[in-house]
Image 1 (cartoon, rainbow, N blue to C red):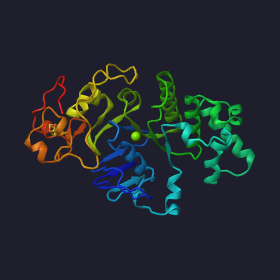
Image 2: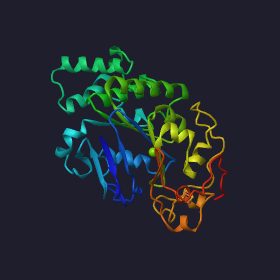
Image 3: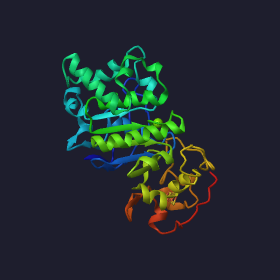
Image 4: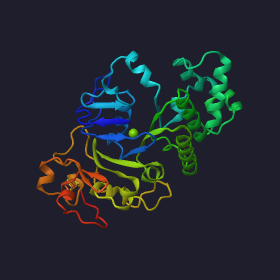
Length: 328
Ligand code: SF4
Ligand code: MG
């Protein structure tokens, strides 16, 4: 249904400033219809970059981004993208920043309906907005208010309603609950799960919070410095993480209470994604690193129902069980 293949890009340029933003390289994953695929990793790992590539906000210099058989990544004009663009929508971390503060909620949600000319006439559009408000568990009366009159969680409901307004099949959600209190996070995640079931949606979910990822995902890709360290079904990843980086990440969460509190942080600093370490980019922080790890970049291999990019796992020299934290 949705397919990103390597080499996705070697370098990426930001439109106006032409400043090199971030390197994302060799990211390869496919998302099935109706599935929730999550990308998890520390800040700077490139997960938001992948999200923006997927919705066409950034251009890839290499590789393919395919949506439902269309080579979305190669389309360069708005006109070429238009029929697909409405089928893919994005939800951002900060709902307030993405909602026009001077517009009433009704106009905010109606905007994509007008932009994509999905309905005409105020009556039909208003009825559709009412339906969208109810779908996100708000009321039609809420449509007359302004964004500042709502709480953070309600504002995220408004941005979800706006994202749903164009009848998308695929939603890219970049840290959609990270700015919210823990109890509100759970409500929004549950709403997203309900909407997925009701509307048959497919999600690419971006988060640094493993507890959130555990709650929402079918499959998870663990990113480190612009590459995928491990891709696995969520149960496999949490029961039997194999990549040393995944295991160190999991070691930082005490439980699944979604507090985001860390038991102990992952050892060592995250190196710059612009100039990643040679070979396996995790080698400066990995307790199992050897000379091959420093020299040779690991390619993903299949282990059970997971894909792991690690020489140590491939060679059988990464033991199971708890992992000690390495000193950088
Ligand atoms: Fe550690 Fe080597 Fe595996 Fe990288 S390839 S995670 S350095 S064992
Ligand atoms: Mg980010």
